[in-house]
Image (cartoon, rainbow, N blue to C red):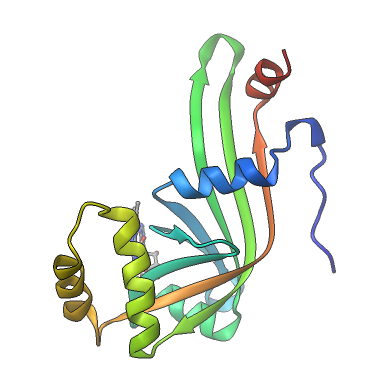
Length: 165
Ligand SMILES: Cc1cc2nc3c(=O)[nH]c(=O)nc-3n(C[C@H](O)[C@H](O)[C@H](O)COP(=O)(O)OP(=O)(O)OC[C@H]3O[C@@H](n4cnc5c(N)ncnc54)[C@H](O)[C@@H]3O)c2cc1C
């Protein structure tokens, strides 16, 4: 089965806009197929590395068990959600990404992921500080790498109309 088209295509964001949102975002929600068919969505920090999203996580837990059973996942980042009370709506903008998640466990991969996340969240940090942080996490941290299969972005009508004026 392919991925769906967006019904309200006038509100669809370009690939460049989606990428910009993923770059400036600091957290999103990862949805997986959880225990006994229950969906499970969990908020996570991430970094966008062109066609891939990287996450770090503990070496055990609900999302990891789910991903080991089924590596398909969906990740959503909300860029903006400004309430416009008088219109009973919000000026929103978001990105939804589907992809398969690999669980990276060897040291070189953990370092690569840790460095990418470290550069995003603490760009002023020194290489020594980052190295200390990564070394301290080895052994109890894993990297999740989502290979992006499909990505869409959407903005609310108010934002789309303002853009087209
Ligand atoms: C903005 C933000 C950024 C985060 N960034 C990271 C990150 O980069 N890496 C990371 O590993 N974790 C991060 N967390 C924490 C993350 O949401 C999870 O709590 C954590 O990853 C453990 O997930 P798990 O499935 O292994 O939890 P488990 O402890 O195995 O989950 C067991 C149960 O606990 C509940 N639960 C777990 N997490 C949450 C939660 N956040 N809120 C409410 N209930 C919960 C659920 O019911 C779940 O079924 C972040 C949280 C927030 C809010």
